[in-house]
Length: 358
Image 1 (cartoon, rainbow, N blue to C red):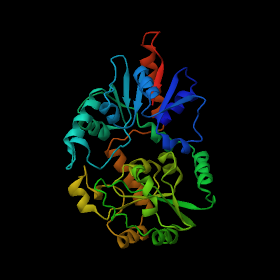
Image 2 (cartoon, helix red, strand yellow; image 1 turned 180 degrees about the horizontal axis):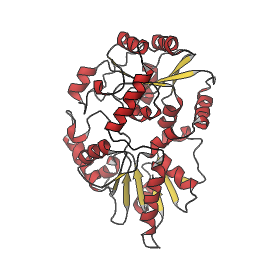
Image 3 (cartoon, rainbow, N blue to C red; image 1 turned 180 degrees about the vertical axis):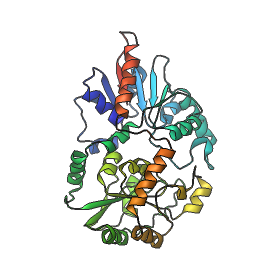
Image 4 (spheres, one colour; image 1 turned 135 degrees about the horizontal axis):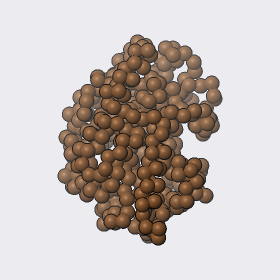
């Protein structure tokens, strides 16, 4: 939604943009274009009013909180879903081994309200068809959030480096593990201090670590991020895509963020200490071993993978992987979605409210 909103602003379109936010996030969006986007607080009467009267609703998550409150899309409203994961490996919804039946019912109700699903290629299209029970018109536009990987990112990189007060000569490896629903975080056992030394020896230069935990762990950062001058907490940074576009390397486990990051062709590694346990409980759509990313289940294996990393081989495998999944991301997805929005509005009655709720 952010990148769609920015494209609407760039084109100077006469639409009222409304953004629903949580109270605790307001302190972290100081660069927000408040002159063009109205902020409304989640859970307030004003939010309900804006949601009920918007012409178009754009979301990248299930709208379960609305359904639980009895708030549904109206007939004259349009719902565009730009789901936050693509080429994802984690099983979800109806395919999960540990799915909750009540949660699935709510997800199905949400899916039934979707008008357009934005996909970035054949694999994601097939994945979304199952995930959203074949509801909604599939539009293969690419993912707007991934446009960032096809542009000159010096401005974004400068912003990230200044935010964290990182010297510009430093290189960054980001560690971004996904959430564990069972709250067993013993798998967060990556030896960051040692790994960053191995990376520096292999790739050269002066490296630091940005650790990015799942948003639901924002209050437990001290439990998982060691105190060290070369390790930075990046959990509260407002835009994951800006981090992905700015760092030089990524280490994760099952997070779909690495399937966005791979568009940069920068080195990516998998550290999955609970691999067998996770595969049995959550389940995966395809084996980790079928991805371009070297897979490790302990620190020793990760160190060996870093030491033996073949960059040319890796880039070739990334290219083949993206081709195999039918990925069409090319940096123009936001423009395509905005063209869709313009068509929806242009085909509407002239007295309809031209408001977009994101």
